[in-house]
Image (cartoon, rainbow, N blue to C red; front, side, top):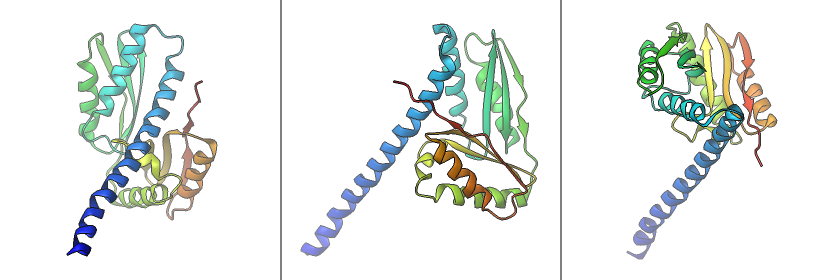
Length: 197
């Protein structure tokens, strides 16, 4: 009886430990995004800073935005230009709709590319995901709603997009992705987050 009780009591402790690790990792990834935002927004007016944050926030809230999609944007006056690549055509239209609803935005130019449907590319996406996020040094980038390192695959050509904490993480992601079979070409667009004091 005592053995069974201790075994059951150990489960919540293990669960709490796991959730704590995930929470700490999520804070780290969020801090990386915040550092990039600070770099982008330096010298911007408060109203424009709020607009940049709101566009970013709305894009991150899109329900089907995943590690295999990458969205970026540019704001010119009251017009937002959306860019990037997505797997689902609905994500392209959802992104435009979400941004169009933001107060202060009067125009949206939707230049998001919908990636071609390809079972071969889907297999490659899964293999790349395992290669990157099963690495203990890179696994922490997966612990957010939308992982920090995005894997874009188009006809066997791979592009890594997103933000990492160090040059060594950028290089490690590059070598892990390059080691995956059937990658035709590899482009590493990962940005190293700048540290703010």
